Length: 240
Image (cartoon, rainbow, N blue to C red; front, side):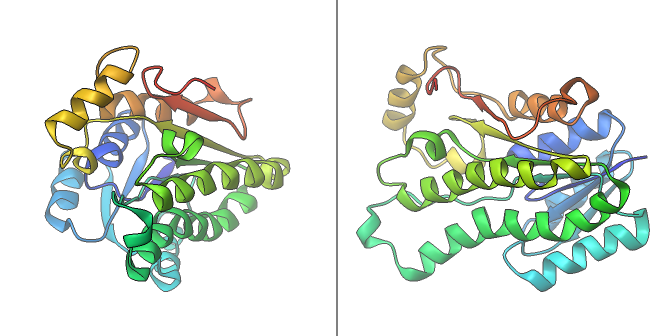
């Protein structure tokens, strides 16, 4: 059985990805930081799923998580870098702590997890890394400058790493969601949601399952010749 590590998997896109990959036959490591009860409940509902608490922005935590996977399951076959936080507000008013938090979790977290997952993949000469970016990483969003920067970094990291580790039989790809019905967007007021929906050609926001289905595709043999790509899942709001 192949093993998938999904960061930020206790809710939203990560939770749905855990469900989808479990159905596809993966053993799933459900990474969480604060939502222990949700992570445990999700793990209990799936076949071969294990919650693991780790702060993806801290090297020691990340190393411990991948050591656990290596010792118990002979390493990671698929890494989904999904953990992320947002911050909406005028850039100049962000505190240094707020800036660090967004960059550390969204970008540094994906970099660290990839670093510690790769040795097992390189040893096996096979593996998959799927990064979760955002359409704002493609085009930028007013009042989400640092969030946009972190997700643009994810897209650049995907492209560069795909070139570097492709020769080792490892594929690195990216999904770039638009407005999705997750906890991250729960605080948007009705006016903002209405405006965003109006801007989407399909005239609706997306669901976590619509993102997880693309993650499952990228993790399958049907995507065996896809490497270094970013797939937008935004209803046509951003067309590159």
